[in-house]
Length: 288
Image (cartoon, one colour):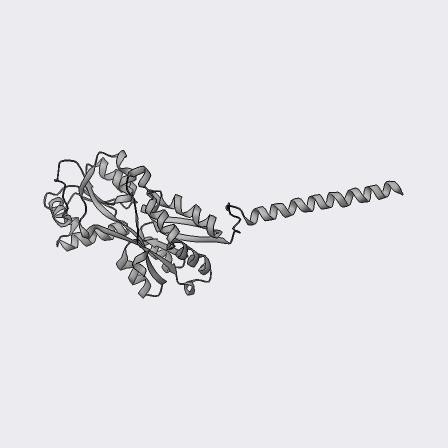
């Protein structure tokens, strides 16, 4: 009888031990990916541009967002045009893009809730050294490229950069494809820069991607600091009425987080230590 009681007691003790182990595992899963015990809330899909990825900004921002809010992020880096299309079809929850005219049209059509300014940098014309004298006149630079039929590599992907490029050609009244040496890459910014280098050609680039890619090329900045080259980024939560699967709560959490003072400082500090300058200038105060 005593032996039977011993077995029963041992069984009870083992049950308590294993039950405790199970609870620890459950708690660990609830706080996975967070060092401040923020519970995991689920996942959002962010459609953004290749410049935010190629520059390394997403590698800094997204882990912090998850750590502080509990929302994990699947990011898809494409051209702004493609990112907006993903929003239109409800394939993304939130967008971080840089083609303001297209973004405004996206909102007006009811695909997004509201556009907020997040940050900006600028575009540059880069190309072979000593071909066109470095200057601050984007229209004259594009005119020189066109008149001399220099090779120009376009993103050709409906991205924010491609949109800006087409706007500049339009402002000087020319059709770029009339230049027989106009090349459409259909690639992201980093790949387009490398293609331009291979062809000893010119291209339009955002400054952030240029700074992170320039050491791989023999190209140089040809034109910068023209006001027409400013490059604004906006964040938009996709309209949850488009698709029942859209994560409205997670998308709004991302919008609120990226506009916060803490995150704006994080954006402003990005690149300073490595490149001696900020790759993106925080701009959420423009929403006030």
